[in-house]
Picture 1: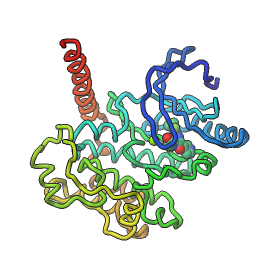
Picture 2: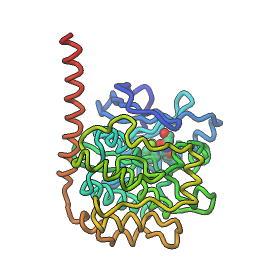
Picture 3: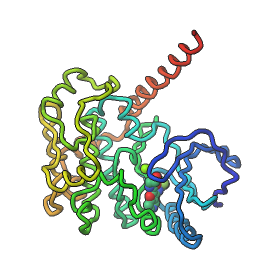
Amino acid sequence: GELKHDDLVNICELGQGNGGIVWKVRHKPTDKIMARKSIYLEVKPAVKNQIVRELKVLHQCNSPYIVGFYGTFAAEGQINICMEYMDGGSLDLILKKVMRIPEHILGKITVAVLRGLSYLRERHRIMHRDIKPSNILVNHQGEIKLCDFGVSAQLIDSTLQTFIGTRSYMSPERLEGANYGIMSDIWSLGLSLVEMALGRYPIPPPSTKDIDDLFKQDPNGNQPRPEGFGCYKVLAIFELMEWIVNEAPPSLSQTHFSPEFCDFIDRCLKKSTTERADLNTLLHHPFYKRYESESDNQDVASWIRQICKIDQYQINENNYRRCAT
Ligand SMILES: O=C(NOCCO)c1oc2ccncc2c1Nc1ccc(C2CC2)cc1F
Ligand SMILES: [Mg+2]
């Protein structure tokens, strides 16, 4: 049956952003751990009920590359979406812990995202609409899954993409207000991969010297990033949108990345949608091919566990220091 608000007990807050707050919760009747996202909306009850009705389609969204769905309900003026708890968190949080994500892990991420996008398109005829590191979640089993995709048309309209912060992953055509579709998700994937490969949002593009410094000082990319890293100028959001529309797209250099990866990125970040690679082309690209055959994700699992162990170690270290004083 449907989940009820009173059956859920808050454990801890997992994150906040763009009008939504996510809690780790326990479902008392089943003792199951879940993540509950609450989105506050000032809309009429009829609109809320339509959103809940449309979100129930998520019960049919079953794929290894899509975060599991347990149920949805309206309570206290919020839309609540209960989903699978992913104990590795989202890739934007992972990126804060490490300098950057190694290419072979980015290959596995690419396989999962392309397969997730294919599933949403083939089986549900929808695009994602919000591909970015914070909407790609991982767990200790090495699974990589998508969340926060546009399954409810009414929720899309009600939020009207007012979340200005997320515009920076939007494709040029979408920023210009032109028609956009799945090709816009491909642009967002390309931009997200460059950000995770370099360890920083890639617009304005870092200079070759910046990138060489980044790789010289820490070849394995495991040290947390020093403050003021790269001391690059952070553009205001509108400057950023202008840059995406008017300037050349970011790219990767073959000094630090494989030719296949560099080419994959170039194909995703074509500013013109007619030149940009579509989903099927990318599913035949050598970079995707290199990783699609690897069935298990034990390399991802051990990489995630190693990062979370550092995290756990630091928690213990801080606790020890506090107790020792
Ligand atoms: O969270 C969203 N935006 O994040 C900004 C607010 O924090 C979001 O925006 C939508 C627009 C249209 N339909 C749905 C959603 C949806 N949420 C959502 C979609 C799919 C799932 C699947 C179970 C994994 C979970 C979700 F939370
Ligand atoms: Mg999100």
